[in-house]
Length: 236
Image (cartoon, rainbow, N blue to C red; front, side, top):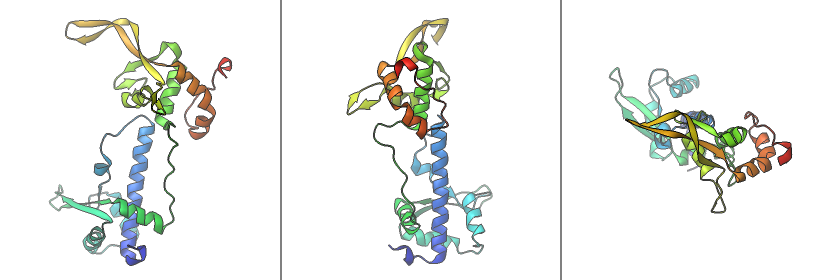
């Protein structure tokens, strides 16, 4: 369906939903880059309330000058065209809350109509910012390794470290970090009445150090906010 087949109001509503969707996606990605992963499926977090108190979508559409009661029919028209999904949930004050989610077809239409280029994807094998930050931490820790803490190691979630542990090159396992056992300063409680004299840490592998040394210039430019020390002189 051509963009021109939508009337002005429908175009503005679809753009508002698209902008809200992209803002939410950016927020999710930034949180992930800081190690705070959101395990909620996109099919759930993409839903946006429209008529809830303080809803950004309502504010955005209101700012466009739409204050009449044609909202329901407009969203219904977009849904019939397969550009958005709509559903209602009970509201705290009795009135149902309208939730809207843009579809892939809807995002594609807006991008093409507004000449928005698709987001660039990292080349195969390249690390995302959160993973590079974790590798930096392992590199800095050296043979002493990164100690465990609540939810992960060194303040980074375990899920992020898994990407480094399970790293592959052309289908071959080439771990960037490994789990290692160290004598514990204080016996670690593992169950009622049972204590372990060891603690587990994460250490960078030889391949991980080589990878860091070889790719440090590229990641430094790609993720300038990550404080990554230059490889040691004897390694360059």
